[in-house]
Length: 460
Image (cartoon, rainbow, N blue to C red; front, top):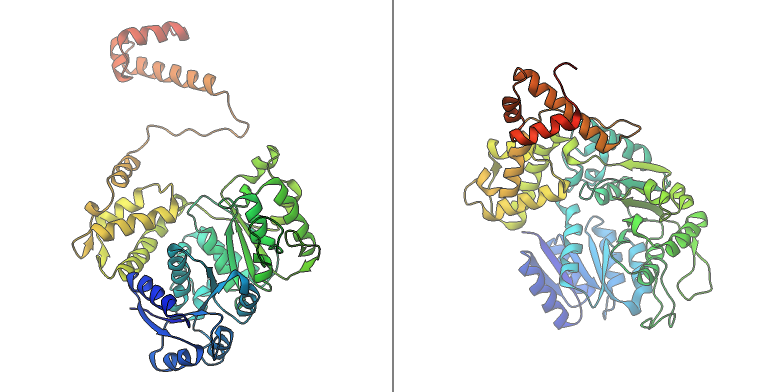
């Protein structure tokens, strides 16, 4: 069981975080100030520290400084109000893993804590690096297929650079994990990695999240706020779902990419930062440019180093590795579940086409772990939808069609295929139309209609 140390001078906040984290299955320690926290760290060796910024005696910044000197690999999450954002920026520069702003949501705490503990579960820092990926890599990057090996090589080559990266791929293929891996393997690894989903935040709020705002710039802006680019100075920013960004923000992002300078919303001062930008999308940006919904000049600024992630169905040899790793993580998290996957269950997983990719596989494994009552994950634990679709995938197709590069006229192509199949059925049945109709599962009347429609005759 992983241990988390909560540090806050407010007893109510300590009790709240203790209840929330214990409910998630963690062992929780608490301290009322930084000095007491350092003593607990020395004797209890927690896996993670969650600390308020403002406290008497030794505050959060002082605690973070002490931890970095003696326990450089211990992750620290800072809890702060928007009014103390300047302290948060200082904390991120000193090496804080992440921060939570008050008031916070329960799911936000759970997500931030889980991401911070990933490092703890991979004690060798090299686990983030491509050279060690076969044994200790983020779940979405597990694999020994040729496409994944090429991806590891590419990450190794580009990690040391500052060039902008554009990651494309279907939803659930692990775009954020690739971005994090690039960050971990880069000289910026000790600095913040901040990610934001451009499609999940309204335009005005997204601009504020990226560039920050000054007090009074809009309703609700009661104080100055630093944006992601400012907080992540000398680190990495991931703009996920970049294809959903509005046209107005695309222009402002383009300006930022041209000089790494920006203005806070409502501000007049140009600020300069040093961040590496990684963008990701599951949209076809080439089509978006053709439709005039995505700027061509911004695309070429982002697409300096393109990375395309293959869908899971194109690397089926990696599914057993992924499934076993996800099973181990899930059973550890839930403290129960099967120890292995039965061969017949693994066969179902390998055969399935996984439209949701690794994220869908993770959900299927988690569900199976929750429902399985034996020490082995069996086909009965896999959802009916996956089992049924897997059986359909296992059936051979009667033929395979390839779309020509130049495209086709669909109706003419379908008519030609239908006519060819009717001729084959007639040849096989000795030109007995009733038997040919049976081969095509048509009524005799329908078959005769099509014979006349296509002008089919034996003397052709």
